[in-house]
Length: 83
Image 1 (cartoon, rainbow, N blue to C red):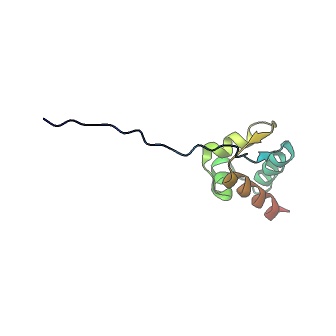
Image 2 (image 1 turned 90 degrees about the vertical axis):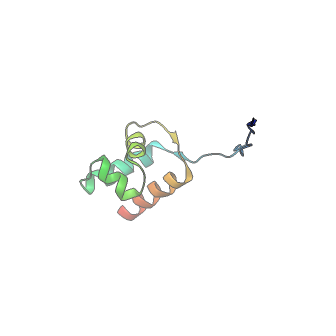
Image 3 (image 1 turned 135 degrees about the vertical axis):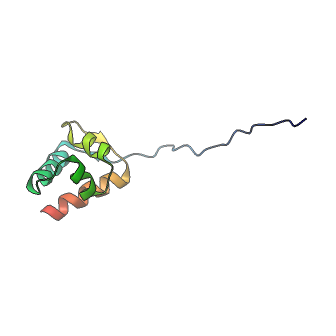
């Protein structure tokens, strides 16, 4: 008879790590990039290097939004390339 035991795996919790904030001005600039290059959401996602659902969520409204560092850097670089 075998007895199976389960172990709890401790995961690292992110304590105190703040996520960057996408401001309404940055979101507006990203939508301007999308319009200037005639991109739909799927093409915009490929252009900045994020998933399609992420591209939808960051362009849907004008509210400030906390995002991951990778997304923030991708948005900032896309805006900078277009200037």
